[in-house]
Length: 485
Image 1 (cartoon, rainbow, N blue to C red):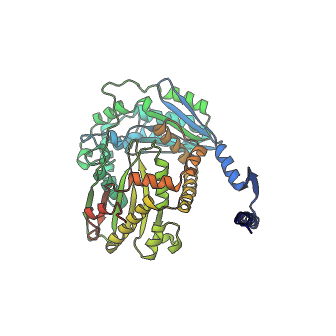
Image 2 (cartoon, rainbow, N blue to C red):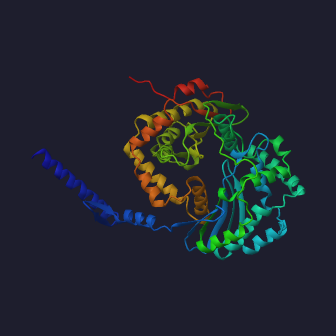
Image 3 (cartoon, rainbow, N blue to C red):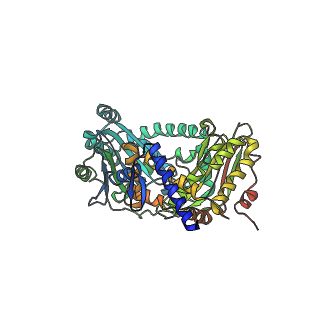
């Protein structure tokens, strides 16, 4: 029997095994070209393409209105503003977050009590948050109440009273919140990580700001920040759920007409934030566990390397001792952590900003395991750069796509996705396009992007707790490359 004939028989047997497996699993198959595919795969792709389109309208003022109508009986609507702690300086650090706290303390036409009663009578939920690059005010309500919600949000943004008594009251609230954040060690570590990675720049500052500045922020500081940053060209009105886009655009045109598009002073620009490979350690031997984060500089939202970095991030994965999983966990680092009891938990992260980012891992471990855990982390990083396999990348792609879809379950996550993407990309990337871009990532792409951002790069390290056993920075840096013959 010739080699070619034997190879043909082998291929036929493989196809029969696949068909038999599909029959056993009650999976229908369809022929696409010369290949057989599961109908579930085709159904998945069909559903992605048929997700409701995101409609976008740019008003005369420059304010963008973007919405996705899913026909849901509820909706989430809010504004995403290109303004966060990155646009602050050493004299007003924390003002964006302070302003968010003042949002629900009454306007020129609504007292705080009136506003709360109006929201409760609608059965709605009003919320806000501040990040390093964005400030968000949003409401979740019945679809019929979307115009009312837009009216309230527009009133908050344009007509907040910012009364002196309310400012003093919220000052105390923020100072107590800062104490609560200090008890959240993950938040503390990530703040330290930013402060050392982007030291001397706007991204190195905390979102809440230092205590001494919070104590002296005035009404004028808050008003100046609104006048400088709350401009129509920097705002996106996003909505998802049961939303009529044309009606939403008409309401937006009417309610946000009071926003001035002109600048009284200099037009604010995004400050450049350089990355510095460095470390910060806060040793406290009275703490039971060590909390460590290590990261390299990554790329911004719109960089083409972002998708391969997301896949690489998924390869490393996340794990918690309470989840179980054992040594057969798909993540090699999770398997090692389980087998050798290296850590209590870890999570890989890919934090993006407009023009830069942090790619790394955060882990919690016993004091004596710091060195071994970090060794395994850096070993996995080097393996990403040199020998990651196609099977691992395929699994990571599938996990990433699943995670992407699960995170968009509900009107609020979809609305957040629309608002963020409109600010970052000036468009909403369709799910089928994002799925296609993820699917195209190969093991070669992951190796190349890992070599570009990880291999022989200076990392930023932040550690809190009993971290005496954590290797010094020179040793950590020397493990960011391999010398092999």
